[in-house]
Structure formats: C-alpha cells, structure tokens
Length: 124
Image (cartoon, rainbow, N blue to C red; front, top):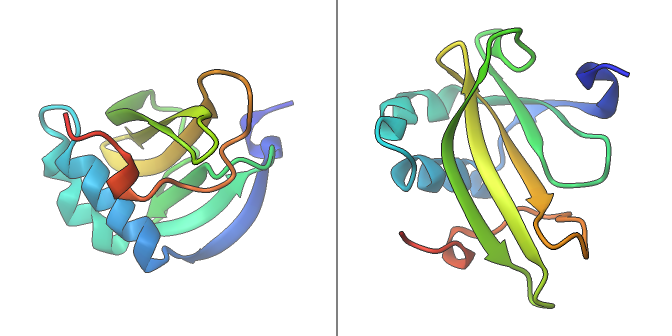
C-alpha cells in the first residue's frame, strides 16, 4: 500500500489553532526553520492520516505533500497527554515547502488523536 492510500482527503484552510501550532513549531525548530514562517499563511490542508492519529498533510500552491523529494524535519518535540502517554510531533518540509505535521506514540500506549497545544510542548 502506498502513502497516498493511507490518508483521508480533507481539503481546507488550517484552523487558527493548527496555524498557531505550525508557527510555534517553526519558532522552536532547527536552525533555519524560521525561514519557513512566510509560508504559514498560505498553507492548505490536503489530507489527514488514515490511522486515526492527528497527523496532517499540507500543500502550498500545489507543492508540498505528496512529493518524491526527501523529507526535511524542521521541528521535533515530545509531550505527554493528561493520562501521561508520551507522544512525539514533528513538522516537515519537502521541496523547500511546508508539507505536514506528523504525530506518533513514543511509548506505544495510545494514539495521539489530537494535536498538542503549544503550551504542552517543552521550550528548549
């Protein structure tokens, strides 16, 4: 099964909380991540992960995910939900275009079904 078969189409603008999270991730990312801040206003959601997690795939002017270009991780963090489950989140780009947010379980005890609030993420 290819990566496009594991997604749920969901074409829409980002919600304000999603846009705030992307901005926070860029502001607290790897060196050079802030260079992508100008793209935040133009992000469109194109799909969500089909497994039930809160991962999102983006495009900007038809570029981003999916792309055959390699993935560049711009920001990578961990957080715990109210029950103490440990999750990870990373923001990535492809072809120099913001392409998505991926969330995953670190401890394998739960699926991250919602995105974290920036206040739940550590300020490194």
